[in-house]
View (cartoon, helix red, strand yellow):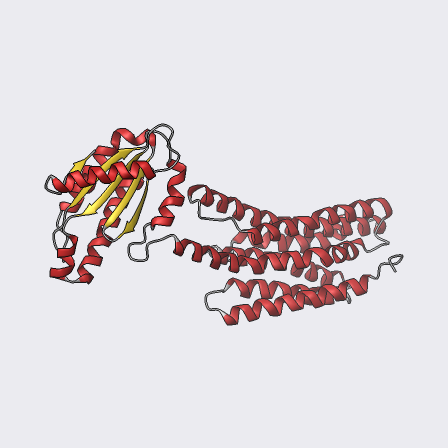
Amino acid sequence: MFHHIDTETLRLCSVLASTAFGLVFALVRFDVEGRRYCYHWSASSLLYAATLIGFEHSAGHPLFKAALLGSLAFTNVLIVSGLRVFDGKTPFRPWMAWPVAGCVAAQLAPAWVLSDPKLVAVATEVCDTLAVAISAGIVGVSCLVGLHRERANAAADSTFMPSRGRRLAGLAMLGYLPGYAIAIAGYLWNGPALDLLALIPMLSDQLLLGVLNLGLLAMPAERAQQRLRAAALRDPLTGVWNRAGFAAQSRRLIAPGATLLAIDLDHFKQINDHHGHLAGDTVLKAVAVLACAEVESLGGEFGRIGGDEFLAVLPAERAPYAQVCARQIQQACRRPLDGLPPWTASIGLAQIEAGETDYAAALQRADRALYRAKVDGRDKVTA
């Protein structure tokens, strides 16, 4: 059954698969608001199917084939534009016209430049294949460049997971390139008698087209999962890390000399009782903004671990600034803010000691220092 490869059957399979994915992307877009990138990916798949059908009737029509090659390149551009929308960027950039123009020129230029018909035929097929390969490579590189940015985010945020769907899509597009290289070698060796530009991608499509589109489909689901994961680690009122999030983020800073700051608002219950819980919530959010800015400026992590209790950790190399940071937080709490009742904070400090692999013991020491600050009259910093 494999002695003769039927190009037309392969093309039909690619048309049907691409049409199906185009409809899936369109249905996904209609089902959920805010997924404009699905328009781009749906248009890419449907246009790809239409372009393959057009190639069936392109023999002997160089201008029509040039338009089809430009359309083929534009299907790749639409994938990139969808990725840009997915990343919150403007979909189209001026450089995106170049792959399309290059594919059109690759079909027409050899006939304008060369005079030998045989040489024109070979050069045309080679240029066509090379131009399409470049447009596919642009998509693969765009996916992997976006993945590189995601890895940078993951390095800064241990809860962030790079997209496996984006990786799959990028590798799928790059997976077409060996096939195009084989096609070019075939043209240079045997001439254009065998339509390798049609045959090789059709063979590749049977594997890579599904991988590409499934990778793209996985990206929104991964983003939704990422948002759920982030929400589970954030305090819903203040937006800073909750206890679980703080534990996850602080692991990178656990080392001898790292400093913990246990922060507690003074007489917070009276704020709730005298001014209402809405005012209390507003105070908590103000404290989170003020203290988080101070802590993060020193490369630390900050979280709310419950009620009016906050916790911060500063890296070991910032230990000399721990007292200064605590007093800046204390002074920031003293400054009156419009519409908010006055409040102060007590802060206890403790360092992680040699041999400690987490902050549990240091937190106990910081809590004891905080208790002493409360006993000594509140609104104090105690180490």
